[in-house]
Length: 192
Image: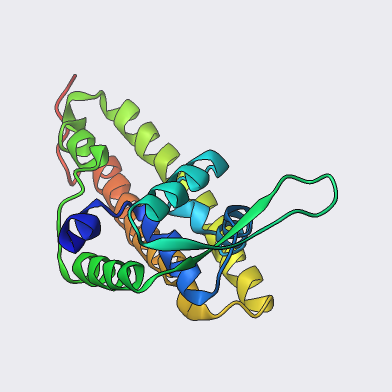
């Protein structure tokens, strides 16, 4: 049973269990914490998805309700805490994902592999536009890392942003070199 739960842990479920391992929280607090840590750069975070995921974790026996509170006219807030089964599932799944290398099959490698079918100027322009978008992301991620550290957020919880920053830097470097090779005609380009 635990093996099935481990395999079924989505990226959102993983980060939610990790937050609950830090301390009990309600879904809105989880949402705010994830945004504060800039996890929205590596994960699609929507409040509705958070509530759905925490309900699934609860029904799977990985978390439990710690308390239900209401302040004034505000809606009830249900605070959850992680259970031992949730800790085991979290540890096993994170270790599995860190240890194993797998292909994510992003679309960019497919597109770049077929870019030679584009007219040369279209290819160069497209690569430059991608590079510009990456430059913007690098600034946003870098600023977010600095801001988070200034708020005394533990650097260890910022590893995903750090990883993304390094991956984007490597892609930026590759794009710059590839554009240069195409522009200087070191890469022969078919006449399309």
